Image (cartoon, rainbow, N blue to C red):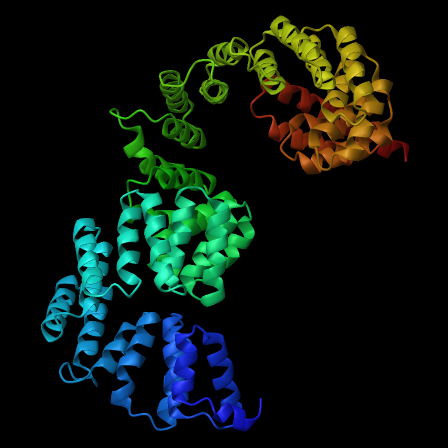
Length: 622
């Protein structure tokens, strides 16, 4: 576009484009004029007005500064600059600008309105009301005063007052979109989402580019779970004001609803101060962080939101879980206290308290929490045959069982977990837990029966055979143990637990060569397991493979420096290789480590005497 063509766009032409909604064209023209150094003061002032309507405070500020640099009088641009600062929440700067504006005369009404907005932003509502009253006296028929009051009352959740003021504004001027926008916001706050959608659409018929109405319409569609319409409406907002933080907030909200948590998280970060200044953004950022597993961040923002909105149950539960996951189970219980009080019946909260108590090592309290959760879930209105309700009950019962186990009440834990069979919810994982608890509780026959159930269920055969092998081993039925464990290994060649169990069973049978094969395979797969090296070293000793024993036991000594048995075996291997001085040192270490066992100490003293005598004999022979 030539300079002559650009010059034709004077103030009147640019303002006409603005009226026609061609704001992008206006910005393009003025930028082109600026590059050719033919932009005027009026151009920059028009540009500032465009950015103000787009709620781009920074860009508006820059445009006004350029207008001032090209000749605009400070007092005549103070209102616009004050508005630009207000959009940036630079309230002190806005105040400084307004000191240059008279509260009477031609600009008095606008100054009073901006002062009122500033007072409201600072939380001084009474001062705001006084400025609005003064503006009403100056121009009693100006609907903008009613709109200002309506917005103030809406912010205070005085819905009836806000609705009345908006209707008054509509009666004075029905050509603007804001009255119906405010009435729509009131309807939405009352939970009348369909009515809100109707009012927002009506407002947008009057002013299709009204960004606040577009964003509230987006929110209303989200309220009724119409994600498609919400996204379609948000696209209109993005086209008008892509950098507006509320636009970005709803973009993040929709991304989160669609499961794109990382993108939602990154989008919210770009909203800056909005994360703290706008409660809905604070909540969303906390919840998105929680769902993305970023629990430290979630804890911070969910706590900020909960302090201002203690009634929000979802936030309270999410904060409680976040605190547990970041190592603060005590504070988690404090957060849950309102939901776990004696006069409340919240199964989710009791379950969350159970998790916190488990983290604190308080198994008995955790079991009681889960017991209450099961009771509440059972008494809920849902049908006993309702699949979802049954699944919830099942998970709670399983959690209670684990808590009982951690509290040392293993029989109760087994009873609870086994009871899941009556609900048709007994899984392979549950059967595995039951079998392990039975093994620990010396219920070896029961563990065998549970393992057989696991085989019947299918899909975990290797695990079932390993459990049977462990049970047979503890029953001292070593042949049966080896048979079961070999079946497990045949199904899963690298099954480390089964290999270890079979090695011990072979060792108990005196089949040290077979034990050695399993143990050597294990140490090649498992790094830094001192017990394995100790067992391998002992196996080499039983096979009179003293050099190999010394190597394995030296590794075991490094990994288990406080084991008296390992030190003693290491000393024995060294002695068999003729390294008596080293053997004496190792055996003395075993003696010092075995302060708990007098008989073992006596044995070590006798062994040391033998090794010293052997060293003396060796010295004589040399």
